[in-house]
Length: 587
Image (cartoon, rainbow, N blue to C red; front, side, top):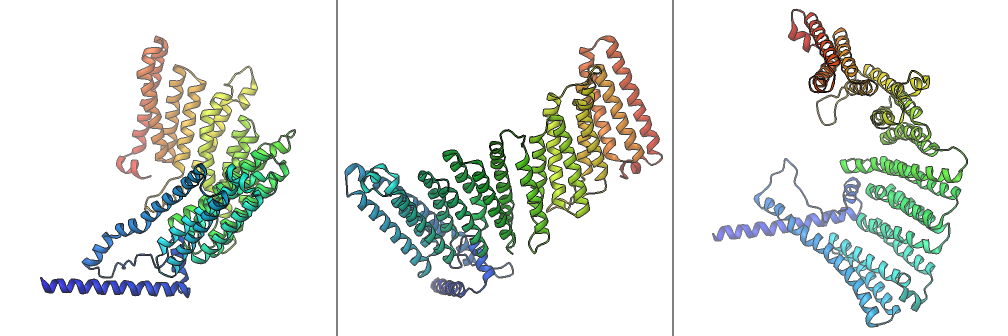
């Protein structure tokens, strides 16, 4: 027992020495910027080499003691991270209550309270940096610095934000904004130097709060300029640090501040358009910068994809509203959305010819925005025709120039088109009326007929294409969804335009056509669709027609259904030949 105890103690001592050496080596590597790729990945994760766990590779031996250390990591994380975070929040809330208590009790004066809060917050920032940089307590130091930043910011804000302070001190708003800006800028520079993305994110968040406070200046320049400078700063930082989440997370705050500026000050439409276009361009550059990085993981890809979606979607919405206000007497609906979409087409083409990853999200979103502009600008029937034209054009262009993103966008627009036809066109457009030729050319039946023709045509176009599903060995047959869409639209329009026994007869004939074409062309999918239609019409005839139709219609319904089913069965019997199992499964 004594020998075992001595051996255990010796192992623990050696392990502590090895960990100390590892921490020193990691600190030296960070100071001399050795291993930039590793440093970049750690910076993106918000960690430093000092605080990272040194995990053995899969081919290294793992001792029982190391396993016990790994199971105790939760205790270290809770002790170093969560206790610090909770304590920091509690401290900030305590400072807020202290200010309120000081106001009520008359302790010190407003100058003293602001001074104490500012000095105390800056002391925490300095102490946190010292602990992180000099003593190696990186996580604790950054949490402390973040708490100090919040306290300093709140103290400076109180000089103007609280009416009692504003009256007593008489601080002009521009001085408070300048002080907050200097605080935010200094913290950003410090966090970039220290590779602390969490502190940088907090600083930029407070920067957006400052931009919102600048609305009280009541000028048309300060607030949008502040928001755009913050966006430019984030993009510039992304060029030297792989902090993609800061860029992606800042899109909505930037446009949110711009929108608050629009609502609060009601600037002229040309100025609004200029500001939004500038923000849109800044984040296009930001997306390019993010794609130029060599880092690639699942979360980073998600952030890179979300950036153009948030940017283009928000810009298109604000520009569309601004254009209508700018030209109230001109029918300009959909132009702004279409312009953003065609801009994304240029972005997609640009990245395809540069040494960065192609912006597939921009290509897909471009097709969706162009289709949306058609819906906004056109009437119901014309909009559907335009959507179908966009789908066909995107598929054609994708085949000619190898632009898979356009094809993906076409699939998304096709889904939206089916939904529009079923929900909007089926109600808004008139049914066929022989006395009114216009209903035949531009009515509900015409819309469904166009959709059916396009979707069956695309099903034929994609019949030999089966792209693999991501992370699996399975393949997706593109023809099947389009064929089923055409079949579903046909069933719906027959049910809408006909009634009672007419629906049963039309569905049965349609099922026979599908089965017949499937047998002739040896396409199993069409045969299955025909069988599905037979099942639908059989259910209708037996459950609905037997109760709600008169005797003649009921008789006709059963006779037609029975004859067509027998004909389909005979066609199957002739088609399968002498080897039915092989014939039914060969395609």
